Image (cartoon, rainbow, N blue to C red; front, side, top):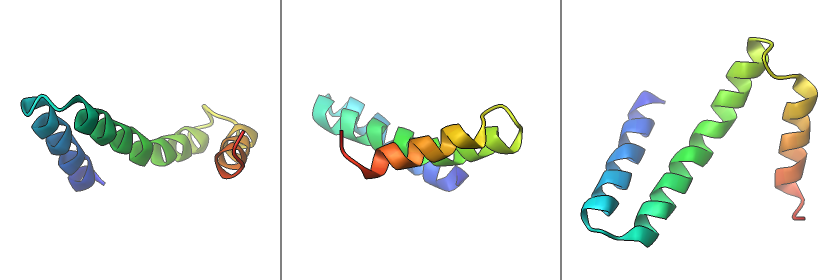
Length: 65
């Protein structure tokens, strides 16, 4: 996971260096999305976030609003 995060950061930085706001937004969005699930799982394991919240989060991603 750390290596993937490093790749994501490099993509964000490369886009910023190119001054490509579209590419930077896309790279940052992908980075945040990739980290969301592991973060939620970590918080559930620690008891910080309730399992029901996690299930609701997964359900809302599957069905478009």
